[in-house]
Each structure stands twice: as C-alpha cells, then as structure tokens.
Image (cartoon, rainbow, N blue to C red; front, side, top):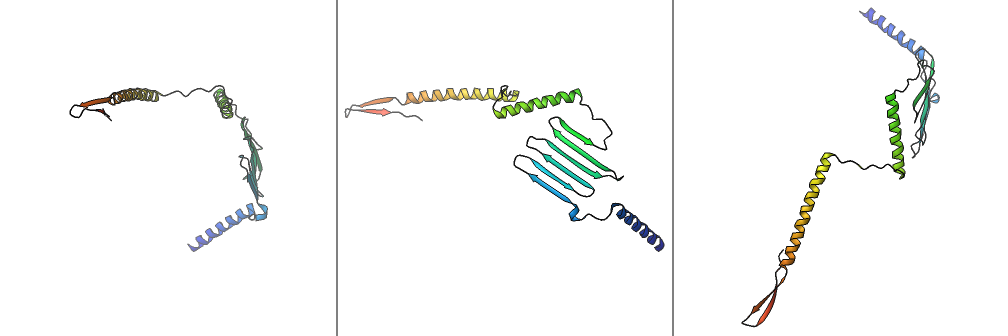
Length: 192
C-alpha cells in the first residue's frame, strides 16, 4: 500500500512539473500592463497586456465601440480578434474564423429598419423638431374611468350651483314689526 502511494505521488509530481514546464514561470509585475480612462460623455478606453494575452477597447462619444483582443491558444497559436459595434451592427474579424458572416434575414432587416427609424424619431423629439407627434391612445379601462369621472364632476357642479342658489334665497332680509313698542326689526336668516 505504501508503495502504491509513493508511486502515485511521484506521478502527480511529474505531471505538475510538466505543466509548469509547458507554461513557464509566473509573469512578473513588469510584464503585465493595464489602463483605464473614461469621461462624463460616456467615452472610455481600457485594456491590458501580458506576455500571452491582451485586450484593448474604446467607446467614442458617438456610441461606437471598437476593440481587439489576442491570446495564445492551447495549440500555441497566436489568436487575434478585432471587433466593432456601431449602427451597422457588430462586426468581427479574427484570424481563426473560417466561416462566412451570417446574412441578415428579411425579418431582422425589417426590425432593424423599424428600430433605427424609431431611434431617429426619438432624437428629433428630444431636439424639439419632431413633426409626427401622435397622442397616446387610452385603453378601454382608462376611457371608462374618464367617463365616470366627468359624470361625477358634472353632478357635483350642478349640486354646488343648487346649494349656492338656496343660500342666496335664505339670506334675504326679513322685517318684523313689533306693535307694542313701534319698532321695525330687520332679521337676516343665514343657513349654512
């Protein structure tokens, strides 16, 4: 049993040393670089580089994002990928891609056109230059609530008018004559 555990530990140590030999010594701090910058306009730049991999990405004020990354794959091949995302979509170029880009279907093209038109309209609205302002349509629930509100509003308006008339009539002057002292009193009835 001890012989088996010794053989097993020797095999594991050989496998670990082989892995260290394949990838080399750990990187030093001087071999790794990174940076990051951004501003209040939404622009940013960031990236890093090391002996076996790197990445760099930037976004400009117009919303275009572009970048690249590279690495050494499991076969020791250097792989490089560059990309760009803008109004035309996400474009990718890589030295390892062997397929043609996928063509846009008619449905996707129609949805893209609809989205871009809505985006352009919203930009015009924000700038105050839109000519196609459509009012918001009420749902059936909202329309029913509006009808109920205005019926109640009109009923309350009529009730207030009647109350005001009755108060005006109730505040008319009333004169009372008292014959024993010969005085005429003016009484005012006030009803709340």
